[in-house]
Amino acid sequence: MSQLAIALDNAEALARVTNRASGQGPDWIDGVPCCRECGEPIPSARLAVLPDAERCAECQADFEMEVHNAR
Image (cartoon, rainbow, N blue to C red; front, side, top):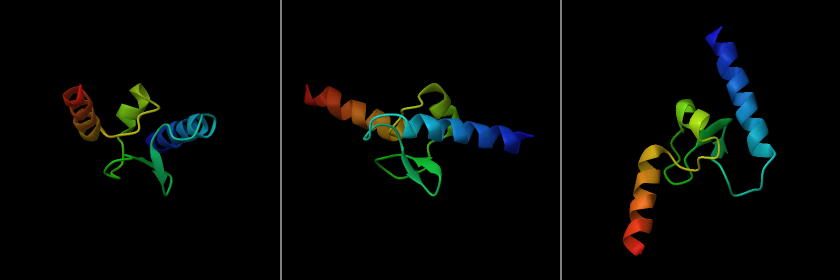
């Protein structure tokens, strides 16, 4: 049952990715949404909240710190 739920979540996420402008959202590596910075898989819980997340939480925090410090 949980495998079916995961498969449906992945299919929905894939549909969202293919129906938006390029350059947004995670990189897809072998069907797995991955961080554009470090390449590690982005947890499904993060993508459920932020479907267009391009980075894992750690890389996003680093990115935001860099942006904040650049101001």
